[in-house]
Image (cartoon, rainbow, N blue to C red; front, side):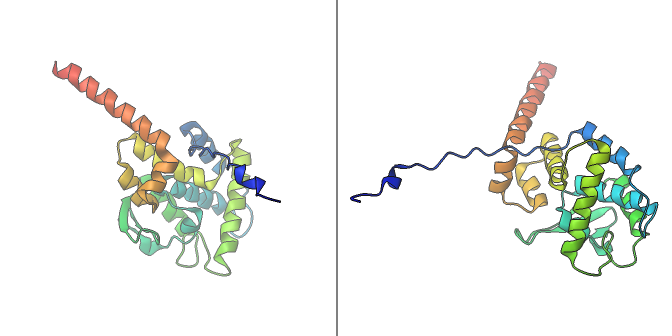
Length: 207
């Protein structure tokens, strides 16, 4: 052949789908389903306590599922969670709602080691897989399709919608600003619209 016909082929243009958080209504159903979770295994009724605490921590900390599995008591001091991302190398304390801390400590009372949601025995990857199966089962009970990362998304979107800067949200997620903007750009626009609305309201009040 005299030439390469493949050179004329252009790569398709990819369109990034915006991150989709869990709605407040869906999250209420998820919490409701925690009380329906099967009370079997070594924890019995404690299963429901542990599942509820795990879900709340995912939603209000922005942690990845593996980081919640590895959550230990030394990372939770005076209702503040110590976050440290291997990507950004930035340690930061994040205040948690009282009801979340209360539920996590209730789950912690059932543990036998230093971790809230892992015995410390075996491979942590196996524990992560167990929790993924638990969340999948919870989703069926709640009648809501969701995965752990959507609760992390809910954390980020909630902060952005309430005026927290993209830079601060990126720090809390352990991401760069560029990555955070890529995933949450639509919500940043929503925050800007809310800001403009507040400013216009202020102008009318001062007129």
